Length: 238
Image 1 (cartoon, rainbow, N blue to C red):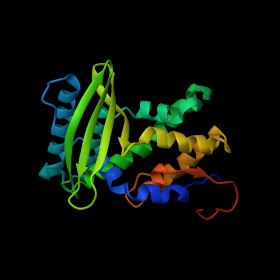
Image 2: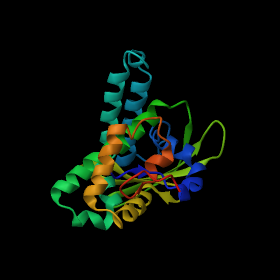
Image 3: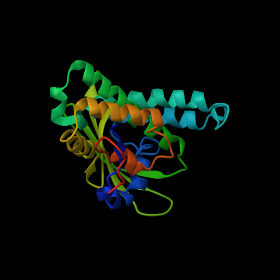
Image 4: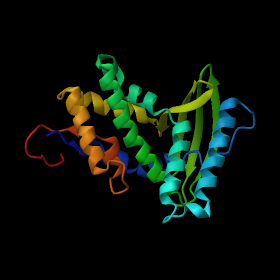
């Protein structure tokens, strides 16, 4: 049986950034917008307004309206995050070696993981602030630089990388304190696929989905740090 476990070797590296990764899930809530009215800025503004309206709607409270609130938030997230592009970039060179069916299954499973994670973080929003630093556009790409300001603790720089897709600006990567989300996943998948087949990777992600890999009870480093262990009895985390 293939299992997905944390890599203790990078636990310490990510402990100091857990808060920043959690805040990244709600990046579009309080980013001051650039003064110039470029298209990416206008689309982010629309996203901010939609998310805030959902979170502040008294009919969508933590009890009766939770299911409807989550459905609405999911729709907004999908309008701003290009999960398929994030999945493709995270798989790196292995993407070309997959069949269209394997690519589709990987995108679906990886999207489920990321989507559920960000939904949980958005719903846990308690007023953290983001400071807009700058926005640069180059052709069909844009990068929004921000700084998170939690109520307590260390500030973090978070950059959001977007690309233009059919008239929309979509997030395809986030960089926190110079650590790229896509590069981190790519590193982990490369490590996995040196000792396991792609089919085993898919099975491991399927198992994680059944267990609820996007739930709040999972630690953040358990989501961003994967290693496939050998078949047989589960080995303890190293």
